[in-house]
Length: 412
Image (cartoon, rainbow, N blue to C red; front, side):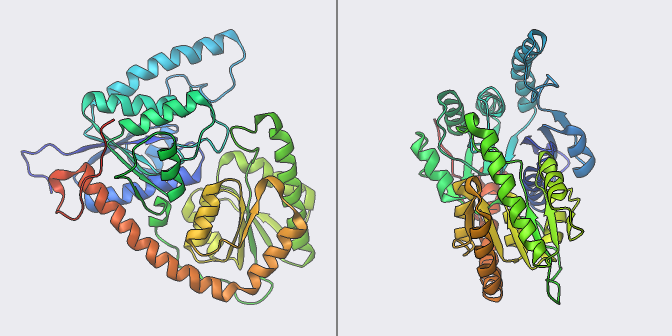
């Protein structure tokens, strides 16, 4: 506890939080749970994409990440272009002022060091650079906790991401591929650690698989258009993904299987609508999930899960439901390997409904064994995340550390 003559530690959380992505918000929820359990004296607020949502849902003050409210709309007119340019200048001052008020800033999870989905350098990479640079300027400890990273081809984006990582006080990654990617981009990762994704630290709902065949199948869909290097054929990739997924859902319905369609981001809703319209069966319904907890409840009640978004996969694996990944990036393959289901991955860019159905049937044959495997792997993951939070306390809250871990940091 903080004594009367001590100033509470001021902690900021930073990122595209409250913006409709359930995975990002789940990472925030895990970090807030850690802070409230281990550092209840800390005064916490956020600089984020959706401040109204974050303030209402998590009960902390929140400030808008961008001065210009049209930041994520394509700017085609001179007025919008000028607004964005002015916003970038304003954000430099706003970010600096916010960072200066804090002792610690945590960037909770998320793929903040990757471009596996379409990304422009002047978007979030610029915001992250402002955070890390001003943190170093004002002596505020900035931590990239459980970050996702991947090799980045675009040179300006790569330069901003690399510099941000070097300026951070603390870094950890959600898989070894992320650490390897940062090393390949020129960041000294010798003292950086790898831990499971922060979302694994969320509470697990108590719900078992239903009895009586045929049980429901959860299908997590995504507004998938390829990655940052696929912009020229984004629509073709999306059409193939949607067509293949729709054919797969139709095949399940023909077998008499109830299907629950799930999303992981608000932008995925049109994909759900398209599948519902194309299949046109009462066996196919859409779940209204507002959090990872909601997703986990749906998946815990399912026989099997087939999902695309990374945090949809995490939810399914965490509740121990046999899962097949429509994999769009190496991080999905790495996650499935960590949890012992590496044989059940299918490429999201090349969805072959017939092959997917074969993999699905094989997955269901091995269901009992896979549930045992997931239960064992989840115990290991829980212990590893305890180590992550111990290390985080040592790095960011040295005055309250009890000597359980050593600080891992780098001077650029």
